[in-house]
Length: 89
Image 1 (spheres, rainbow, N blue to C red):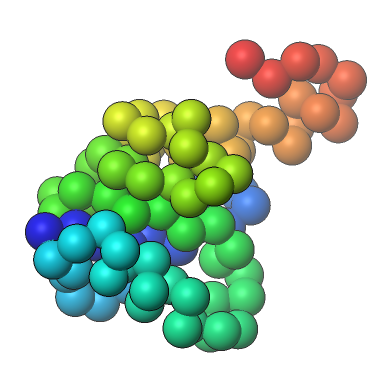
Image 2: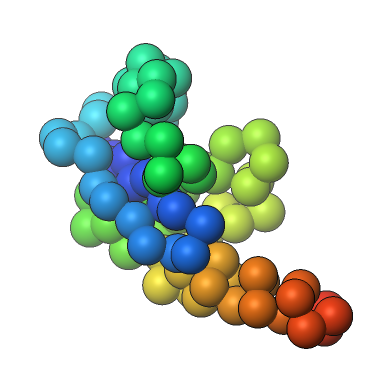
């Protein structure tokens, strides 16, 4: 079973209600959400516990297997580092 989380630019996220039997069903639900989650632009399929990214879609495939807290940190730190002219680690 899988869950779908929707993350904002600052790393805050919400968990969509319910669980999904397959990754494809979670993505299908994501594609039907429309503007419902306008401020939570980035969607990730996560484990049922909600702790690990299972699929990040086309643009975030490199985040598979990362912990949600780690990805949150990436999102929080990236804008600050970019504004300061630093490279994001």
